[in-house]
Image 1: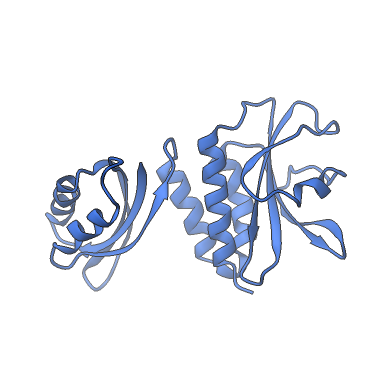
Image 2: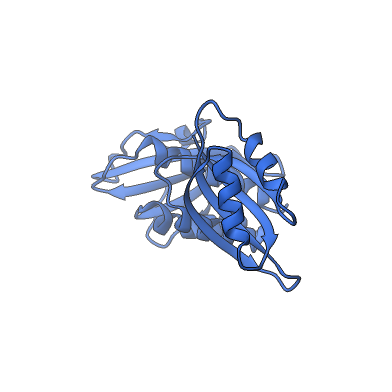
Length: 214
């Protein structure tokens, strides 16, 4: 199973090596490490993408990290195999840096992050589907949008006759204000969306919804 671990550690030579050794002792196989920031107080924040055997609990990673002086685990979450660490982290940074515009920012970075041609966010206003945000190349809404508002997880969507040769996927989320919305993405001519891509999309949209300020 893949996990994404964010840790705070002393920004000194040897700290990263000690962290890698500690994670290895917990049977973790490190896939990539991304430096998130260097702080003025002499600490750094790193994201670590790793694989963990099915018989090892993620708590083992936290225990291993906390045995190191000055190391703190900020959070750990499941991550999907095949994910692009650097692109995903750039996308997350784009909407967490402006929480009041989190969903709008997410929509704008989805094409580059997921290799799609366009993205749009739709909600219901006065009983009808309405576009919240969309990329410049996104098409106009079609009657199918009403059906999209009923989905409850990341999935592929049926083709739309008006959008010829476009492969579609979408996912549902609920913001901190309790309002539901759906993000829909399209690829002209394919390829089909992989299950790992759908999982990533669902995870990222849910995160943006939790970040978005009222």
